[in-house]
Image (cartoon, rainbow, N blue to C red; front, side, top):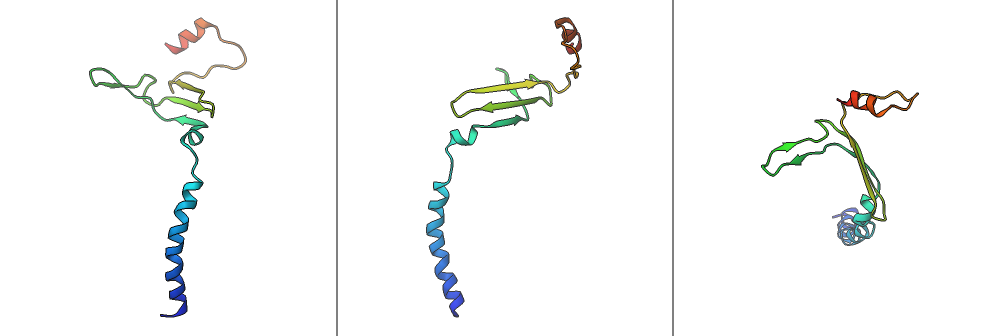
Length: 100
């Protein structure tokens, strides 16, 4: 064996002993990992009889926001809702007609 092989064979076990400790020291807690804004991709519910249904349709739009203090907000809507004009504030009756 030449010097290069001997050096590589001695460095590999040394790295194997050092790296796992460094990797675990850099891991964040679960609380730190979850504290952010998440895009929701589905909302599925299962009834008592085992039937599955989507309360917000087949392709809902939504976000989940979690902060480090334990507060959260979940916002969901059906993807097939019409876009409202931003130039005026809609009335309750006009919104109700558009949603139905």
